[in-house]
Amino acid sequence: MNSDARIYVAGHQGLVGSAVVRRLRALGFARLLLAERSELELTRQSDVEQWFAAHRPEVVIMAAAKVGGIHANNSYPAEFIRDNLEVQNNVIDAAWRHGVRKLTFLGSSCIYPKHAPQPMNEDCLLTGPLEPTNEWYAIAKIAGIKMCQAYRRQYGFDAISVMPTNLYGPGDNFSLENSHVLPALIARFHEAKRGAVKTVTVWGTGTPRREFLYVDDLADAVVFLTRNYSDAGPINVGTGTDVTIRELAGLVGQTVGFAGELHFDATKPDGTPRKLLDVGRLHALGWRATTSLEAGLRTTYEWFCANESRLRR
Image (cartoon, rainbow, N blue to C red; front, top):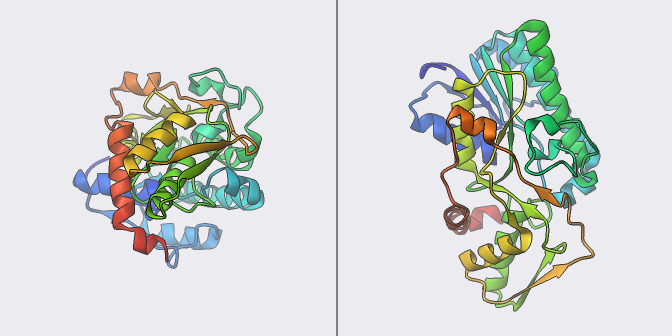
């Protein structure tokens, strides 16, 4: 991938896409193709075909997706499977048809079975039942992996699949209803601190273990893998370390400056007991995450505070 390549970042306004754009620009990639949703509706096949024919990207980084936490996945299963299937099918097929040299598809660690051996390596895929609370999203992402593999096998299309762990960072969704656990905790603790609330309630028992990757680290890994990885199998991207939700809540509380108590509501779902990725293959290629959870939380909270008025609109 040369610095003068025409690179289309699908989903460039989202958490992942915006970080990928930041990283590409920092590395000197100047010919970025970025389409607003008003210009390009990715769920419409004809629109995607016309856009690819007109702009002819050479590299595609597929960061567009409908994402959300447990509540959103439980509440909108049809949208999570339909929208994600439509978007990835349209983009992957149009990329191949219009001569894209390299496509990087972004998946998720939720593709792995609920009770997969820990840490989860790439060979765990399709070896057991999924976590029921997000299986609709997971099935869509598995279909994306298989589509990349099928197009590679039948057409020789250089499409790779990257499986990140739980992400966080500037540009995240901090909605209390539809966000993932970490940004939701930041927003909840911030509200409690501002309102002098003495107790914050967290969903679940606090015992599940989760791995968290700062989104700018993921962006660096995406560029690295787009340049250096070409294989049919998906590749995990994470830190290789995890924390309990209780420990995470404590770290977020410290970062925000919340001095009250935590209450864990065991009547709410925990989700998968543990989600830790085996990142041995990625480490063997020469890439490792560099941002600690503490440092990433500080930067994320600073961004949240700086953008709070806009986020509340």
